[in-house]
Structures are given as C-alpha cells and as structure tokens.
Image (tube, rainbow, N blue to C red; front, side, top):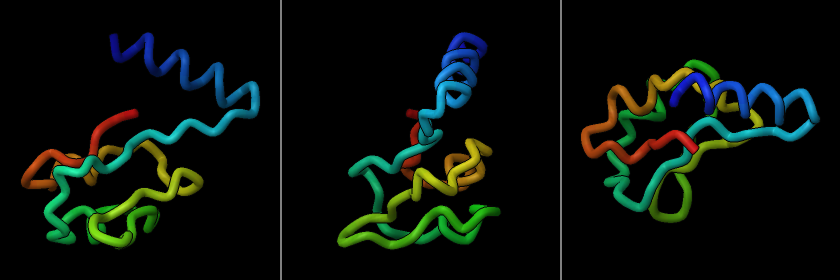
Length: 75
C-alpha cells in the first residue's frame, strides 16, 4: 500500500500539486519532541498544538518516530 501512496504522491507533484507528507493530529500534547527532530524546520507551535508547514515537509517521518503519542500522521 505504501508504494501505491508514493506513486500517487509523485503523480500529484509532477502535476504541480504540493502534497503534505505529514500532519499533526489533535492528539498532540505540545511536548515539542517533533519540532527539534525535523531536519527542515517544518514544524512550529500553533495556537494549541504543533503544526507542519506543507511547503517545507519532506516526508522523512522523523517527527513520527519521536512523538510519544503518535500525533504526526502521514496524509
């Protein structure tokens, strides 16, 4: 299934549509673990929880690996 999702992502990006790789769910406890782990600084504090900038996210998954509540999820 992951291969199929990656293929769709490539097709959309080739057509000029930006696809955000990850988003942070409302399960976020605002601990900040994800922000420091992001290699492209795509994560910042929002009003109540952290948010991912879709223009910067590179789909590396580093945020998901360190989150204690699994709040970062692939789109």
